[in-house]
Image (cartoon, rainbow, N blue to C red; front, side, top):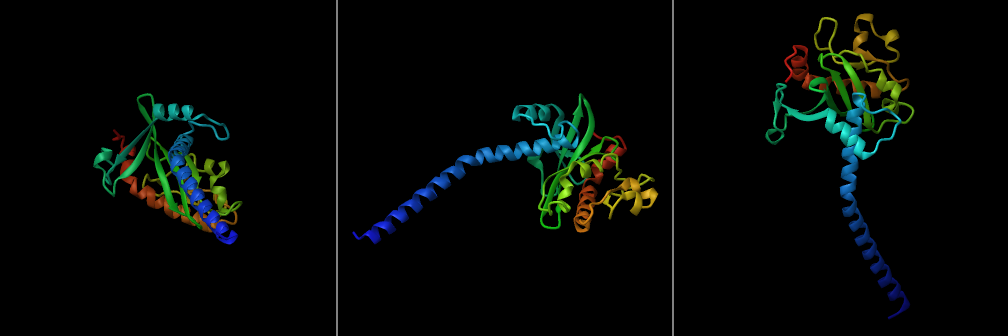
Length: 232
């Protein structure tokens, strides 16, 4: 066998071996990757209601304990009624309930909406009055760093706290991202329904505003139940 053929055979064997090793490693790590995805989502659910501190590191055990003791994951139908997960259909919605003892303190909506360059994922927490935002967090996006990417920064997330999803008459109004500072851009009577925008990221704000409205509209039957104190 010539040296050239030997080299080709050796290269082919190495390719097969490397491929097998990579496949084995990928399969073996899938379990860990899935655990990390679940852990990251739990951290952000907890963050949306202030159960974890930004910048502080928590062990997986601590996150599991905080989540299991304070959060209940349920499903609701389009009318806002709780259903069993095994009975859910394609139009049913996931919902997280934040419990303080035996009382519901807030409910949390998963956010998945269009951004400028890709999907924006996060959580929006609403107090048990069905009207007031208690927290907002973004855990995954493809927006431009320093511009639209500011949506994941603490200063932007804090803007949402205390804002209302209803107007002064108590009717649904959603929450929008202003084109600049709310106090400079939005009439006073509407300022409770807007958060400060990000300089140079108008399109990100527009997409996020539209997505938040669509999501809040889907969950409006749930919010109405809370506003009427009919939550179960």
